[in-house]
Length: 80
Image 1 (cartoon, rainbow, N blue to C red):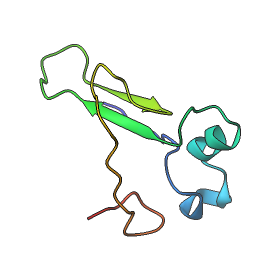
Image 2 (image 1 turned 90 degrees about the vertical axis):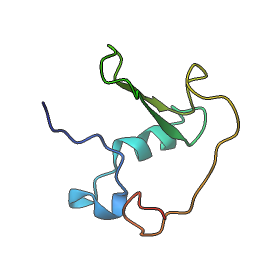
Image 3 (image 1 turned 90 degrees about the horizontal axis):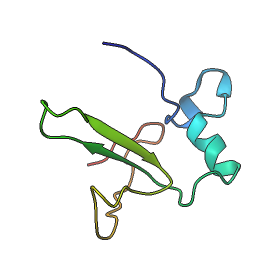
């Protein structure tokens, strides 16, 4: 078990107004698209538990168009 800060938060809630990792990656042009995606394995017994992709999606786990939903509370990745 572990805890950590991933850097996906909004800058508005960052401590000391530090630029979060995700914002920095976008500003530096390090990502193909301004998208990050998660794949979570439904089978808890598999070796691969999940995946985080910056700049797109992994075509092994998703084919199709993105579905976008609006953030309902600025500062958090909250949606309805």
